Image 1 (tube, rainbow, N blue to C red):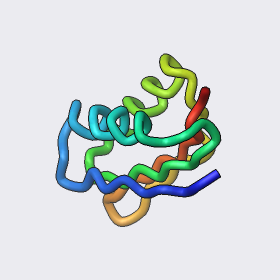
Image 2 (image 1 turned 120 degrees about the horizontal axis):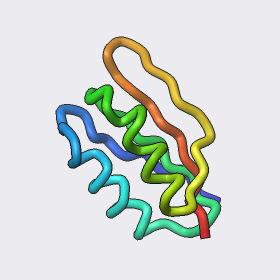
Image 3 (image 1 turned 90 degrees about the horizontal axis):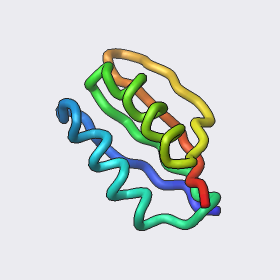
Length: 75
């Protein structure tokens, strides 16, 4: 298991989801990805994408107009 960070700051929908999808394709099942962005839409869009694609959202939080989603890559 490896932890990775994806910076999607200053990107608007749908780019954070597309970048997340592209990054997850490079990872192995069980890897952890933290997505950091400034578009509040990622708080709904990325968890929805995870549900559809079999990945698990471990945590979400926001601070100082930034949004953080930590997910575990599924099989």
